[in-house]
Length: 364
Image (cartoon, helix red, strand yellow):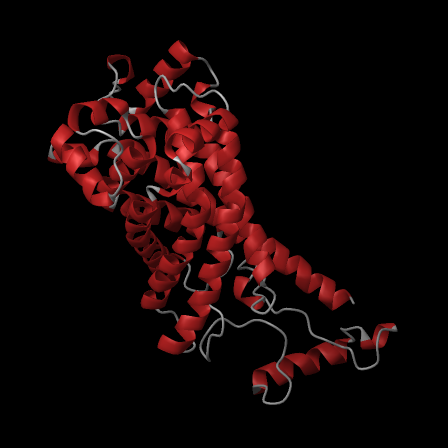
């Protein structure tokens, strides 16, 4: 991610700053003028000679050279594209994860690993069965991730300027990720409820509208947010670990903070794996609250499970301590490419949109 507002000693880049330029910048500008670079000599606006973004020709595109162009709209568009691609590409693994977190699965839905689960689901239930519910997920992921990344970027910069002016603050990164999660989960929680009910083995729902109608009529509107507090309890630490790990790794793999696809992929994958493994018990409880798994309910309590404490008790009663880590393999396998895709796509589109905006402004 970019670190805006770096002080002296940061990455060189951006237009010359007018009065107060360093001797090196003045010399560079004089060189441009002597060579006739700029629009002033070409019939453009009088005095409109503006130097292009400075870059090291051997180092690839300089992400930090475009600090002022990454607007809120840019973050939202890049975030929406990243969220949709992330969920669509990884959806079959997400389906397997949901099933492997079942506390008392049907004998026909007991899987040893992710690959075996995918093969059996496709062989016994059809090629497109692992994709059921993808449409509602893609619909919700766009706005949820747009809010998520836009909020994160804004708060990260604001808090970093307060905590560590001109530099990077891990506290600011973690806090920004936590607040962004509140908006993301508010948009995605109803989607998660519908998606996970459609992913379960022998789900009675074949269409999203059937599931939404049944949940609304049988359990009320509150059912769509029954797992919201657990979702937050899981995602707040998940995102804090996720963002802090990502930014920490970026400092080591990409200290100049240029657009560097390989560093974004590696940092995102590692950050997702660490955060996923640490928060698996909360994800198991969230899945139980979303699905209201019938076998678990019949064997333990009557009615619906309605809170994190109740979910934790039920998970322990049904499967003991090991039940809290059901599906951990699928969850980590899902998160490694998922977060790698999300960060690489997000950083690419943010860079691309910002670059096009700067080129458009320079050409005006």
